[in-house]
Image 1 (tube, rainbow, N blue to C red):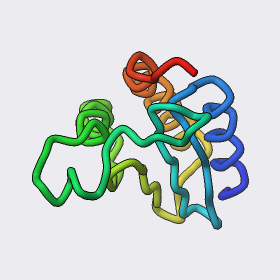
Image 2: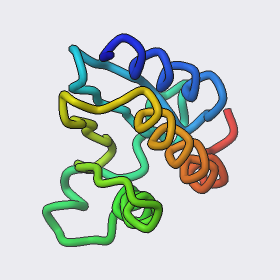
Image 3: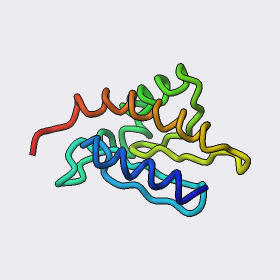
Image 4: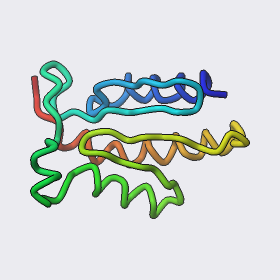
Length: 112
């Protein structure tokens, strides 16, 4: 199931320039968001997080929550850790929600 989910997110990486990297072990997956894929420039930094500035990824996380997807975010990463009993249909539902929300991030990507 983990390989299936990683494959789905890697397919999204090919579609969305805002995805810098997809990493995972089993069902524990990290999706890195970047403002520029070539330079790996993040949307926000740890310093901005610690300073209490609004983070772009928090906006995206809120949009995912509206779609029924609970996901952990940290500065420039989504941390995806679904229950081990998740079905492929539930994974597809979540990936489709990410696909829709990542369009917001793509609009903020810098040109190379």
